[in-house]
Image (cartoon, rainbow, N blue to C red; front, side):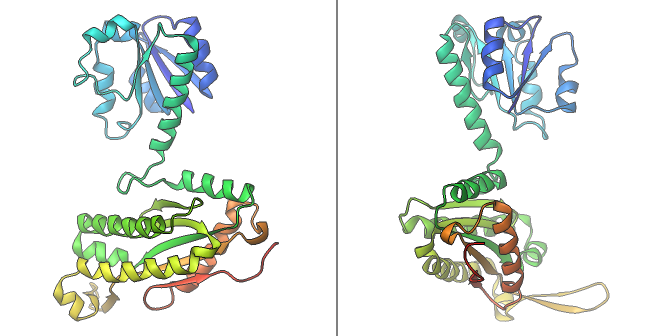
Length: 307
């Protein structure tokens, strides 16, 4: 992770050493520099603000980034002296955490490591469903492969989502995405197995992981629940005609059936996979076939074992 430290003049040598050991890259910005522009040009993963800067500039830099539509998500952590806390109004200081500079080196290091790990998780969380995002998905799947775990990895895609979004609007589309996430989460949770995981790749694509022995029943359960719930998102007219009928500018009429889901499953039997990319490519091939079948379907890859 890359950290930016904002200071008035100089950064305390002891703190600088600890921060440098916790983060992969550290850039120190001083008050006589154009801090905002420099951060825009090379955005960090986390912003640390030393008390020397805060005491001289109040919380203007915090407000600058908290009201920013592009980098407002960046974690901001002030470095305070213990006595400074008596004068802090947390309602006016919308930060994510804080460090006390007078704490022991061990405490400061531990808190910075904790903050860094939390920031990593939050930066890779889907803002709508709050599920782990693509990087977390890849890391988890690769971890399973590295450990030789015999798990099934399933990629889930909603069919005919875009026509629905176009007709009903993004707000209703988001409700569908949330409902789909809940459907998958609840089904996976009920099998009560340790090696399970649910992630949101983005848009209408999801991933879930479970032991191989559970995959067939889980796919069938998720499809059953989705097909039952999804009809609640259509009006009666569209349901009566079996989906959305639209007319293009050229006058061509096209029908888009009620949304369904396609599930492509690969299995790490006998340590079949060494790398996430292999599994992803196999799943892409399977999903392409499954999406060509009408309605909700799943397909489990049976094209051989160890390669």
